[in-house]
Image (cartoon, rainbow, N blue to C red):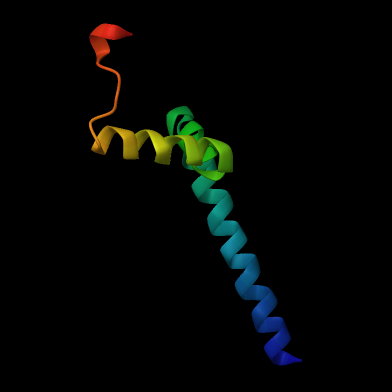
Length: 63
């Protein structure tokens, strides 16, 4: 039983740390986090980076 309480306390501390971190993020950091957590966006970024590494990107002058 004591072990179960310690585990709950550990989870509570981890949640409090997470809340503190999230509150301290600025809008740009929140947007970055949202993009990284979005599977579709993350996949698009990965594909774009692979194309860039292969030299298949669109030059800025063509945008």
